[in-house]
Image (cartoon, rainbow, N blue to C red; front, side):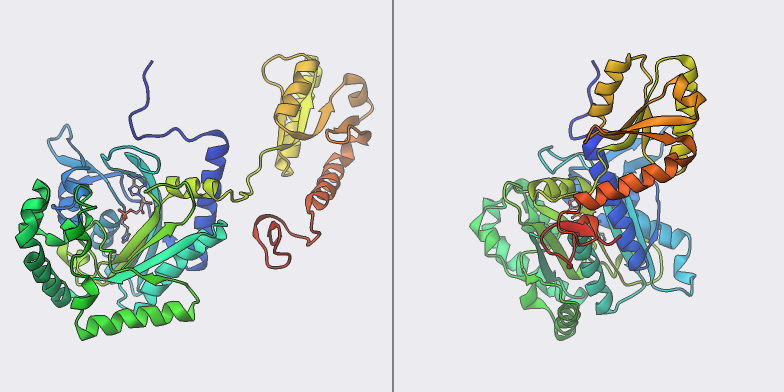
Length: 452
Ligand code: HAM
């Protein structure tokens, strides 16, 4: 049997419904913040990622899926979304659009050759957003608030926002020098990669997975101590806007992020759920003011964020969030002979067009088997179509919970189902607040509801 590749997942059934729900919440949130959807290719020229993400990062040196295509081009499966968005921004001259900044979001698969474990995959799905063309600290705060709001809209309560600043070029250079000075006497205690990093890019020592527990690494100088006045003022502004937006955060000087393009604000959002393990960072992002020009575009300040959907779904499960997915159907239509079957086909079509979730029999089961199937599908109502009833222009509809059956004129079936389903929903609405399904609603506070 051919098996799926390590670190790849088949998402189906209930889990796929949760994914779709997460994506729908992301879409709704992005719409409110006025971000438009962007779809860029899954593969790009290898050079884009080497130049964009940095050729001393783990993502590029160890985790990159590179191949040569039949035309001899060096191609890479995208490990993240930002570089592709920036390439597209430059190539499509979006910087020339008077409507600035450009605010885009995406949702798609990314590829990293990592050691697979829970929450760490080789094919991963991220949603993310990028703001291109604004240096305003308000856009930093807005991106952070949007990320937080998505998690909140999904019903996650246990999240922690960690923010830090790497500062501008001058601050980063000062910091770089301090790191070299600090690590140099101890570098023999570090892994081979870190020795190279010391020369090429000492910041990358800080996110070394091999030396993560090394005390020398833990006590390394912190970025915040090397910010120049301008960078410090800027970071304070970001915090002021976050305060105004009532977004709670902690300053965590250890956040440096694993990609090279960042400057100024960097942040990560953690799930603080028990049993989540070490891959508890739901998402991260930051400002990357140099990337557009580095890739051949005009100087363009940018900020963005991305979040792994797999990890997010895991967090929802661990936090036991009541996710409003539909796991039952409204009506299951049953039949015995061909005439009835044709009627089932007709009626299913009509009722689906009217908005009901309807299913019927496709595998030749007898009536007993069909009743079992209706239960399996958690049908709220069942209907055995029989020729005699159909001749009289009526059907018998049974409430599968109360087992009560009613004879309904075919002309009234849509009205009847609508009314009955509304009644059922009202009964399920335990607190009587008039809302149903979804995130916790302020009106009652003790059950999960969403405004109708
Ligand atoms: P990143 O921190 O590399 O940032 O990835 C963002 C999120 O993607 C992580 O926090 C995690 O949830 C998820 N993720 C990353 N790798 C894996 C994996 N192997 N398995 C499962 N989930 C994973 C970026 O990708 C940047 N492009 C974010 C950004 C956008 N910065 C500015 N704009």
